Length: 490
Ligand code: NAD
Image: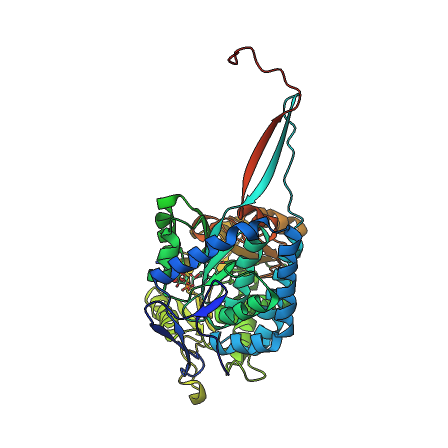
């Protein structure tokens, strides 16, 4: 398979200024897939210049025509769906079934949603005092920097590019240096469908160089960042130089609560999806299972049995349900939490190690891991970001509420109950950006996505995202007003 491996600046694929590269590996067996160009500060500066040059024409283009290009991009992704699904599975370790059924279709759908929205986002006409007309337009902010993590690379391109481009901004995007291949392939389609050069620029580089330059760049008007809370805080500091706008999608420690009246079969299956989908590498993963004591034993028995039955293997092999984690460093970090859990008195109910299968020995595999732990434990407070779930029990709704809101994070969480009143009461009590009732991890381009507290601020998706990529301009017209007497007379 041939891979695009250069930077995408001004509509062209170019080498990095310094000529250096970054190795990209297959997480299934550690083999080298390709070497990508390593963007550094000078390359980011070049990309920003290209985005600045493209901005006047792009922001003045009829919104319907911007939308038309996004719609064409959605179609082109669907035309190449199988290729994207394989590429994403190869680079990230997501099972092919998931990239085929979730990552790639969701990417196309999100571009299509924002393509349709480009000419629907409107200004307002606020009612003001007599004699004046006031109207408010929404203008693009300018050049936008977008920094993307490694857990859903192709899907996050659509979450970030979709609203930014629909609103008339131009973009400098930095994918994760670990998994850049689907984003670079997307750039080829961006050219093919006819986006003007410089509207989208992609710089593949490390966070502390290319990413940091985006965060501090004086000509970038807004940064949209998805990644860890620690890096997000650094971005806020770096943004102060030119007071750029910042939107942050950070970590999570999703509570997934099962009440004693829940449909247990649905809850067991849904909770396994909540944590084990994408090997648990999701900010919204249901990583803290909170079980009512009356059903805890039965639920745990069934859940552990399901976890043990999950088929690990080559992401490209049919039948694989869970692939490798995305990098060896990350696998080691996830496994380090097993020792942390045991040291703090936790009990490992299954997993907690790499699989014994010798065919997986060179990959970044971790068995589905279930640990009994208490709220104060580090494994219940810190984001593990792997197939690692804690179980904690509660005796009543008040205690459940304390556990739900017992971390600094506030991204998403879920609850399982057949009691309608309780469902709404508990959902209202969640301190988080998203709540799922009798389901988990639902996302849709129309529904705002984001968190509170240490999970960040601002929203992706929906009208909120579009709004966040614009500035309001308020225009006043004197249509029939007598100016006040204290105005200067000449
Ligand atoms: P990370 O913060 O290390 O990296 C994210 C991106 O930021 C990468 O592109 C990286 O190169 C870049 N980066 C790293 N250091 C930087 C710096 N100093 N300046 C600018 N950019 C820098 O996170 P990760 O390890 O790639 O992703 C995992 C983390 O991301 C987890 O904590 C997870 O919860 C979080 N995440 C959050 C969401 C969300 O929507 N809230 C989604 C996915 C991942």
